[in-house]
Length: 155
Image (cartoon, rainbow, N blue to C red; front, side):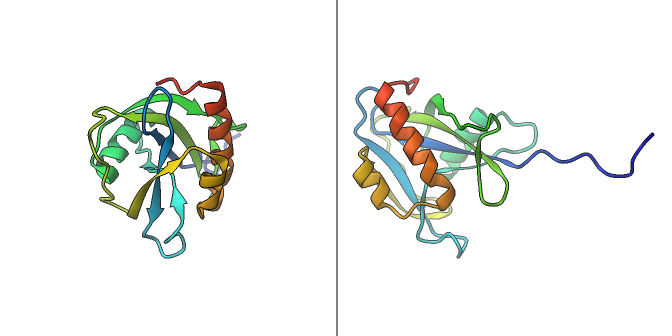
């Protein structure tokens, strides 16, 4: 028996980078303030973007960081979610977040797309929780801090 009902589509996948100031002994995280769309403007997030069809998540993240920040990164461990498909976002999409470090430690990220401000934020609960994060990113911040406590960034 066949059905005219299409198979359910997999949720859209987006990727983000937890970009650390140093691969060993990091003290700060690059945070990005959204400039658009209007509903998200002024809120902070992990830089990143959408995974294109046929693209691997890590490749998509390297591409997105280059497009959005103008820098090359190397990626480490994933900040894993309870859901194996990634962190659930408000629109039903899934997000996978990876630790990252600048390929060139002297490079300076710049807000080229979707952001009006970048900030190196101290890796403390107080400083990270003081930012007005996009709501779906808040649990990722807590998971990131837990991962950092173990030293397992993969960088």
